[in-house]
Image 1 (cartoon, rainbow, N blue to C red):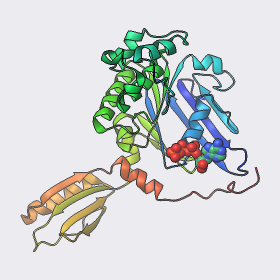
Image 2 (image 1 turned 135 degrees about the vertical axis):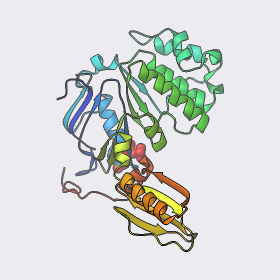
Image 3 (image 1 turned 90 degrees about the vertical axis):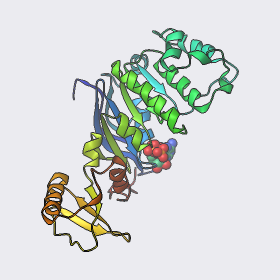
Image 4 (image 1 turned 180 degrees about the vertical axis):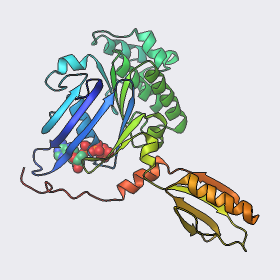
Amino acid sequence: MDESAVIQVERLTRRYAGRPGYEAVRGVDFAVRRGELFALLGTNGAGKTSTLEVLEGLAQPTSGTVRVLGHDPYRDRRLVRSRIGIMLQDRGFAADLTVAETTKMWAGTLSTPRPVGEILELVELTSRAGVRVRQLSGGERQRLSLGLAIAGQPDLLFLDEPTAGLDPENRQRTWQLISRLLSSGTTVLLTTHYLAEAAELADRLAIMHHGRIVGLGTPAEIAGIRPARISFHLPADARLPSLPQAVATVDAGGKVFLDTEDLQLTLTALLAWAAQAGIQLTELTARPASLEEAFLAIAASGPIADSTEGAAA
Ligand SMILES: Nc1ncnc2c1ncn2[C@@H]1O[C@H](COP(=O)(O)OP(=O)(O)OP(=O)(O)O)[C@@H](O)[C@H]1O
């Protein structure tokens, strides 16, 4: 066990009653370090929610060990609950209460709540304090939900799809709020379907696929499983030599793409050749693979063979 970890998950499995032999989570290991934002990504039905429910103390693992802030989140729920915040996707707000009343009511249930004014300030809802919840926009409602999640000054914050359905401007605003929380030392576990969100916010991330973790690392490390890409136009009479580590393709418009495992090596060779031959490479771009490309490659890989699938529970 890593004693410095805020969340420690070892060989976690989760099987649902009524689906004999079907494991939604199949031996998952990961640790979340103090102060980091760790994102859990996955294809649909990959097992993110099933994992999250165990971490939040809402369900027991079928097997394996989970520690949250040093405790078993299910058995020691009382100890853990006061130190975590959970932002739910669909919090059932009372539509007729105002923003301030909703926040005050929630803060009243907590042992060490922040003052209501501070909560509203943190999620930029001060000017909406007297507005009824039913009149809030989708973005404001999500920010209220975030406000309630941080009301108890949690050491650990669970954010389940915090920007689902938001427009780009509101998404950016929520990202800024989350970044601010991180800089104040809160540890965050985020699940999201927006890869750009994970790329922007996550220190490290895990990609789940069919109940397993199939990629774990920084966004750059995960993106690095796919080749980098160089693209350019060549003059019609030029012939490209063979370049180290590169696989070349040409599209119908004559644009050349070089996929490479070693961007620096291939690019250096390309530029040296062009300089020596006096060739102008127009519209030249070079970039590493994106998190999205890596994710799509993983998602396209299909189910992972597993001897427990279909076996008796
Ligand atoms: N209560 C349940 N009973 C039986 N099977 C379930 C139950 N909840 C989830 N499952 C199944 O377990 C698998 C994992 O589901 P889970 O909701 O954890 O995935 P997810 O990664 O959160 O998916 P999504 O991104 O689509 O929300 C899916 O095949 C799902 O149908």
